[in-house]
Image (cartoon, rainbow, N blue to C red; front, side):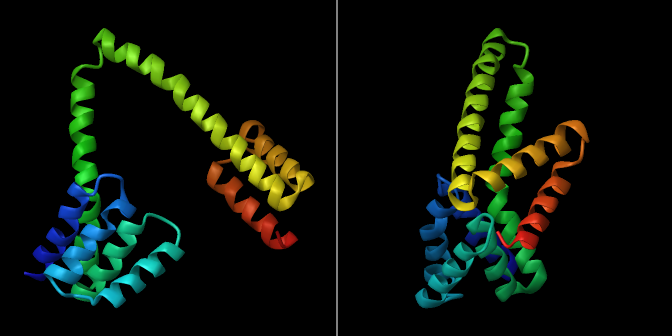
Amino acid sequence: MIYWHLFLAFFIPGILGYGGGPASIPLVEHEVVGTYEWLSTQEFSEVVAIGNSLPGPIATKMAGYIGYAEGGILGSIVAMLATVAPSLILMIFMMAILMKYKDEPEVKNLTKVIRPVIAILLGFMTIQFAQQSVDGLGIGYTLIIMATSFVLLEKVKLHPAFVIALALVFGAITGL
């Protein structure tokens, strides 16, 4: 029964928590602290604090920890699946609709509009990252990292994961 309760405790906030992990935190608290009484309010706030200090989505980190605490490894898996299930189901449903109507002129026109918007958003994000890098590292290191990354990605055709790993090694060696 614990696995069913874990599933419900994280699936319901996943459905109702419009806005992602941070928006669903109060809903998860209601289930975990109020309904099932697995944690006290203080313990839950500590879980949220630890979750915020780690990289990645907060909802899945909380689900993994609370699921493990209540049901072991299987409990962790159930809670994390329940957290991502609403989004996954919606994506599959939306993809089915998109595939059904992909040849319609309205859908094709929508795609033509979305692509440039995404390109502009990615461009702005790149500019913000570059500005933060210049502020934190200086223009010299930023240009070195950008130029080296460009060459490795475009000319050498190195996988992006390796480029990121090399950038991390560079930062570790140089103390950045």
